[in-house]
Structure formats: structure tokens, C-alpha cells
Image (cartoon, rainbow, N blue to C red):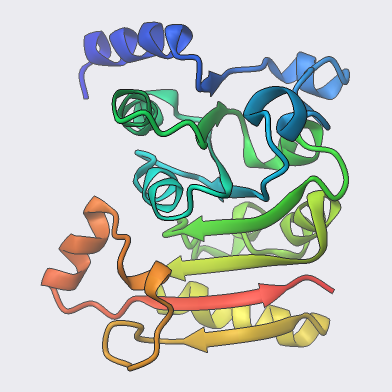
Length: 224
């Protein structure tokens, strides 16, 4: 994407009512007003709040919002030029239960208060295979602790990935830490009984992986 296009998308994001772009200082200093008030002031309902972390183009956030009009969905990514597409689609198609936040995932507990979130989706994260990059892996113990802070008791986390490494790493970590794995499948499109919300919503890159016959894995778990 050219720099002109990026700039144009950044400017458009500033005009979108469904996009929030707090500064790091605003979050860390506790001045982000939606925190603790997402239901009351932003969505204007009491429906469950569901996050997509590292939402990319926002395809899954929008897809889930269409599928579940009685849930509130928030896509989070540091790259606003990417989720511009999802935010624009949500506005054009009048999908009021899809919002987007431009921020870093590690600040999630500054964006939401304790027990404010019902579910978290992590879709095709970078597996960060190099050993020294484990601190950036989105299912490492530090990230799981952050998720636990904002999730309600029994809040569900979903991981969908094309990385067998990420799938195995996460399963091992969950079992080792005593977290509850509700469902695990190393090839959701080749096994009967896979959850419909996992197979019926696809990202652009996912459709390419499937054309290459690449297995897509999925885990649903609780952070105890």
C-alpha cells in the first residue's frame, strides 16, 4: 500500500464514528472515557462484548457482527490503515455492533475494565517462531494474564491459525498452566462437527491458505 493511500485511510478513520484512536498516554493515565462504559455509552445496550485482537482488515469482526446482531464486536489493531476496510464496510452496511480501536494489544487492560469482555478471538496471529520473540506471541502467559483481567469469569478465548507451531505451542502452554481447553482441532475444514462460526467466516488470506490445502487449526479455551 502506498503512503498516499495510507494517509488517506488515516484521515478517513478520523471521521468514522465507529473508530477509536486513543493515545498511549490517554490509556495509561486512565483518561480513555469508553473504558468501563462500552455497553452504556458506546453500544447503548447490555449485549456481550467480543474482541478480535490483531484484527487486520477487520473481516472477522464484521463477519461475526453480521452473524450475531445481539453481540457487540470490537476489532483491535495498531495498523489503522488495515482495519479501515472493515470500519468502512460496517458503516456502509449499517452494522452498528462493529467498532474498531487503534492501539497495541498489550494495552488491552487500559482499554477495558475488569470483567467487561465476554469473548476474545485471535485470528491468524504472527506465530513469532524465533525463540527471542516469544514475548510477542499473543498466547504467551503474559498476554493470557492481560486477557484474564478484562474477561468475565468463564470468558472464552478462540484461536484460529494456519500455524501448526502456534497451535501446538498454545495447547502445550494451556495444559501446562492448567487452563481449560474446551475444543481443539488441527484441521477444521477436514473434520465434521467444526463450529460453524469458525468455518463460515473466512479472511482473505484464509481463503488463499485453503486453496493451497493448508490445514487451519482452532482452539477454544478458558483462562482459569
